[in-house]
Length: 336
Image 1 (tube, rainbow, N blue to C red):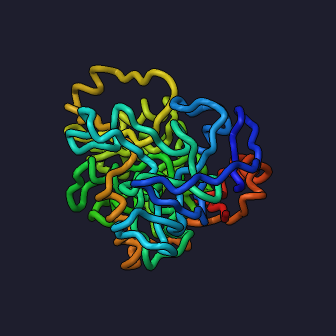
Image 2 (cartoon, rainbow, N blue to C red):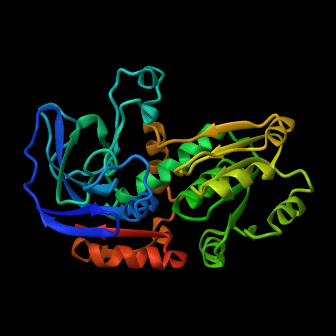
Image 3 (cartoon, rainbow, N blue to C red):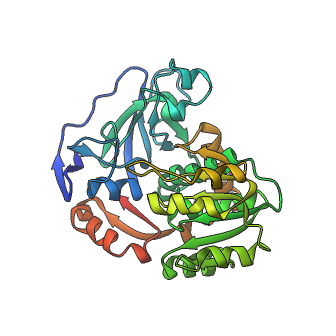
């Protein structure tokens, strides 16, 4: 079978590998679509903190069932997505109902080989019914679930003032679900093209270019009070640090992106707000379910999310191009 391997930073190879056998308790899936995300770009550039090379990348997966265990609810030909967060089921996080933060987690495409290949065998619990959705939609469920999870973590109230810093795929997902929960959303990014796309295609009318006057611009938009909840989806330490200053007194800062290194805040600035600081990692089954429901009822127009399409054969050449053209790429999906 075809597989795309990141053998070392800045090198992708299209290789032939032996297809996995069907294993008891697992579902054999024919991968049809793989979404590309910031994690894949960071792996390519050598900036993913949890990865060792070589690695078959890809964790935003849509495909169809080839074979399932006897008695399984899944059937051959059924459209499915994959929950790529393979958890142990027994650690303290799993026992608390947080398998997304499992101490032994194996994320496909990061800790373990992922889905940029033609066939993948995964535990049955990781397979998600995507009946009625297209393969492209199935491959976009995971990144939207990350945004849905961050919003669920924040516990938004209707009419909450929300700032989302970073208008990439994850940030847009956060903004979409925050708006669905009734929040007033302001989007922030360094790239005007990203904000223009978010405004034109998704109707996010309140956008701000990040720069030296950002704090002043956000203060003006919030009557000087700043924001009830700030989501940082940049994965950039400097931006994550600055985001604290956008939080209203009594407000919440949610860190969605992850970066290599230490994150430090001014303690007086943190304490005077009585800030609630939340980390948001991966997603839960409930978040996947919410995304699928929103796709099915039309609350999310996935055609607007997908800006680029390519094939598996093109990936070694096209992925560096997508990184270079990031200002104009929201979601690229590769066909296998």
